[in-house]
Amino acid sequence: MEPLPDVLVKEHLEQCNYKVCGYWDEQDKYYETVTLPRELGAELVSSSIGVSHKERFLKLKFLLTASTFEPKTASDENIQTIGELELVYDENLKFIDERWFLNTDSPMIQIN
Image (cartoon, rainbow, N blue to C red; front, side, top):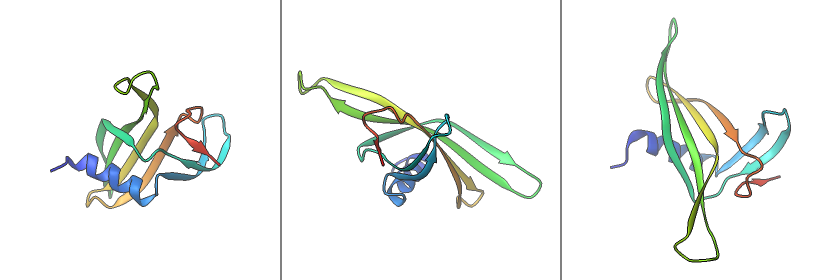
């Protein structure tokens, strides 16, 4: 059985069809659609529990990576970081929010 964070990030990526619509990068450049590779790795890098006056929430931050194969040899694998994804859920694990931090210069990302 997969760990819960892995299940949540995979579910989220599948629901958004590996696309981020209406993305603003750190330089305030707007992208209508950013398409992520289907063979995407996601590693949980941090998690936290937040509490406000009336709500509790879970924040999960993932490092997103993609694999490319160099044509030199079939076993020569290159792992490239393409960004981060932060997911926020309420105490019942109902999705609340997402924050994307993408490397739009990565050749693994398709921009429209």
